[in-house]
Length: 183
Ligand SMILES: CC(C)(COP(=O)(O)OP(=O)(O)OC[C@H]1O[C@@H](n2cnc3c(N)ncnc32)[C@H](O)[C@@H]1OP(=O)(O)O)[C@@H](O)C(=O)NCCC(=O)NCCS
Image (tube, rainbow, N blue to C red; front, top):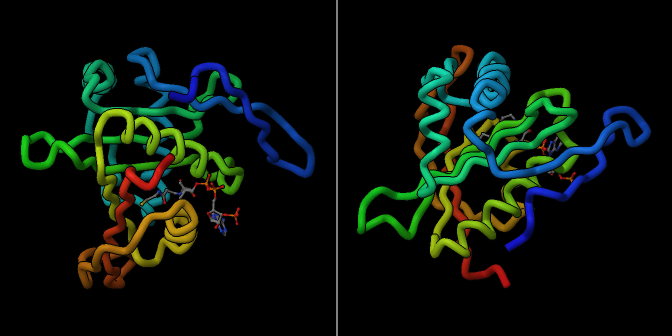
């Protein structure tokens, strides 16, 4: 498995390389940073279903202790700017599946953070015996869909008018990635 703990990558916030970012597994001490990052994306109100992070800091610390699931963070100068979660199916019948969620703070988008976090997560899923990684995305979130397609996610279906965003119905797009295509 790729050593996520010690890999630094460049981030371009202006025209030059500004800072380095690191993708690593989250630890309980990241709880506050994760909540802040998630809440900042939820505040935008157009990308995620929930508008409030549902766990307290204590609840989040507990969640992070669960080794069945994976949480990755992207860290820049000790600030958490990206969060990825993998939640494995809880039952014998769906343990070979997982749901993926991802959010990158707005100022840091389009720097391949999302792509690199998902690549790491898919390898982790494969190594854990998770065959099928599912996600749901609003049909209007074209940047995210573009990224998922580039990474090899396939369309699985569409739930029509599943959400109401800013007074308009929006479809829920279901996408999936089969990890057995990874080398
Ligand atoms: C979706 C998200 C996670 C992508 O992360 P990111 O770090 O910005 O994405 P990347 O830099 O890895 O982009 C990879 C590809 O996505 C597409 N993309 C991402 N941002 C884009 C933008 N602003 N404009 C156009 N295409 C974009 C492009 O195809 C890009 O590939 P390219 O650079 O070769 O053109 C991030 O934009 C985000 O957190 N958005 C808000 C929350 C959200 O939508 N979460 C997903 C809900 S299902």
